[in-house]
Image 1 (cartoon, one colour):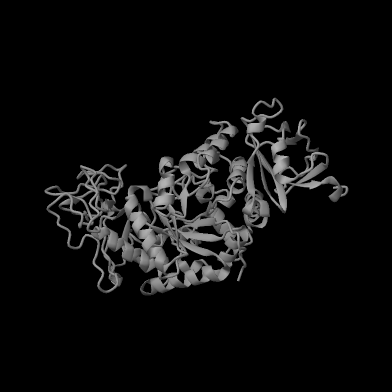
Image 2 (cartoon, one colour):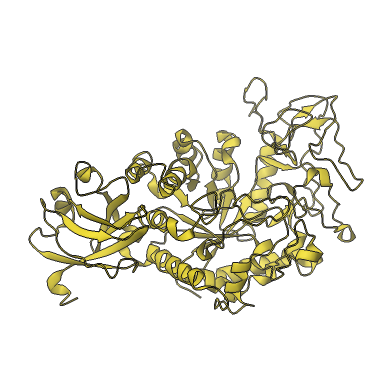
Length: 575
């Protein structure tokens, strides 16, 4: 069992079991599970999990675990067949949940034993020292939601609804009486989904004929808010609240450590406050990560609702992406922490996930190495959680045309597919990367150094943050459009982090304010040396006299970053 220290920062490794374990690289566009294969729970072995732990992860987010609509036939096992006009791709969307009390049969070696296989995966994950995250999708479910595995006494969502009215606080869905559903997708296999009356679509589309850009394969859940007046009807407690609580408790009882709550901002704040407080009475260590896209609501979801962490896409991700691609100056990063001051540690940073385009795609940086300065900032600037998407550490480009998912810079979540770079790393369970090119091997080695620093370096794990941009705003020797600089420090360690987002090597002079010396107790009279722990600028000399007026001079390579641990020169000898 691997040991985790007392000040652990969450480093989350997100993976789709469907793709992660799939060694079949036939990769036929739109191919079936028989043609293209599918990863299984059992493919995520102890060796696989140890490899993820060694990379520096503390959590694994298993995406696509709960049963969702898909087009593989499992009727022989008592699982209802789905309809092509309300399923995206052959494998289906993990966010169109079909049975909230079951796992995806695609992921099982033995379909009748699919839940047992998942429970054993949870046990393996914990045994290696990693924690388990799965998705909670509270805003919507598949159009054909039918639970064949619900516990005795549990009623299905929609069971007992009054379908003659648009809204009732005790209905689970919203209805359009007298209207019939029209899919934007033409069915080609002679099977057409029928739905009358129509239910509102998951993205708040109250039309009988949603477009292909709507979440047409899903239906919106009703939490007690009237769709026309916006008036809340929370007394008595809406039936959807009660059913969702039972679902959450069902999965919590299986030793899940956290839920990543999909589109949490589309569900009423009052529900989250009620649910999280109630569930944590029985499972106090269970954590909730909210997908929120409105920065002005961050306080509300953290303080009022009780979320442990929130996505920071709108501030950090959007800013860092623009800086990497040259659309914003590096100095704008200061605004990211200023606007979340007081709750930095609760904001989840990422450069990739299943929704976003791959760094190496033509739609983003075009080269995974060019984004490494941004990754260093994400990992070292604050004490918040960090998310890595599987294959990111190898430079996956997301430029395949898999089927439903076209060439869009994303790795498909809708199709049966194999990831070549990932399988080259896994190498039939040996995890030695034999067959990978040198670029991919070097990239993974860099990610391993960086991610392990998150919880091994005291200043990064628990230290304070000191932004150096304000003291260099009028410094002619410092290009704040390209360079970002800050300290992380604690009693045991002082780290200077410098990143260069530009395509050129830069000579710089960085001014260090007297205020920082006073905070840390560093002497203004001593010489210091800095060793680059990331080894990106190890051949660039960094002997420096930290002077209040003169600052530090140096050079930083193009598209690089350095984490310098400052030591008095006399304690470093002739280094």
